[in-house]
Length: 381
Image (cartoon, rainbow, N blue to C red; front, side, top):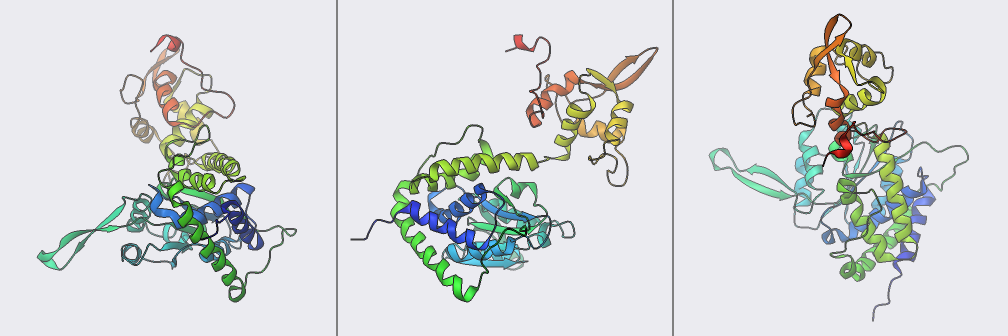
């Protein structure tokens, strides 16, 4: 009879193994990474798999080392640096078991000096879901046929800067930073320490077989406020935490709240959402209407905003109108400028009442107080 494996104690050891070689930015990061390692052994139990992204503004922040430690702990690791989308989706669909893809230097693929790499972005996005496939034409000339390649697999990435929004929203983000002088770690020596990691990996695999019945079909309770895509990202990790027990369910949910909150704070959204938010928080605060010329003057004078340099030119009336017309008023009409009487003249401008519905739907909560309702809105159903 096989001895029961203490999942909580095992995950404690996995976390301790990471702590020996990496200084992560928070306790939440250690929890998330250990849970992610374990979830890679149970991919077939989940509807989706979160990407985990080690990102930093500068090199020398421990990103590659983090991937090296993860590599020793996950099943069938496949290290990819500048790999093509074709190579990756063929590896995933080869029938030899799903690799865990570890993509280092991801900034060379999606960074400011790289191209769009839509094929790779599409692969990473599609592979987030168990049903995700990548379609390609196979054959020559008129004999080509369309073939679906399964793309579902666990992916960890590391790189400088950021990632496309569609990948960030599917990821647990670990914002790495350089170690301070008083932060010491043990040097990682592959010849010595890989074997230790592999022993933990094999024990994780054995635990996963015992836990499969518990994890399959589990619907873990989400912390308040974690919904939609963040809930998809964290559901597998919380299911793992509930399966191992001990202090992990509580620690996992605390980590979830911490990292989801941090990701929202760093999420500037699209340029359209940024425009709406700046109009609400910096331009039209306490004002029910404002001429376009005054709006542009205020936007273009903001030091930490992109409006003064939109492709080499400041934001102008035409572009402002085009951007705001993408959003609707409460009456489901495109937001548009209207006449505003200013003394003896009439100028074109925008009304807060027209923007209010878009502010509520798209913008993050205001920094200090909730957005007040429009007069009379309390009577609307």
